[in-house]
Length: 99
Image (cartoon, rainbow, N blue to C red):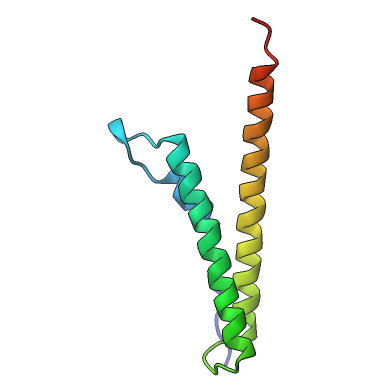
């Protein structure tokens, strides 16, 4: 039996950052970052849970599911680190502005 290949959804952070909220339908930057961190943590927890289930012999968990979950968690973390680095870089540029 050949299973179809399902596309991998965008990183959880992108959905967290695109959600709207706050006054006037605008997303607060702090809320977006908090949602992104929560999404990264959730992806990591999911990957860890699947890995533990595979190691303990759960017949419903397949190796490829664990691999995909771990890759998604890694990609989410890399994206979050890139966003953090850009925010720090922007902050440093603002601090170094001549007034």
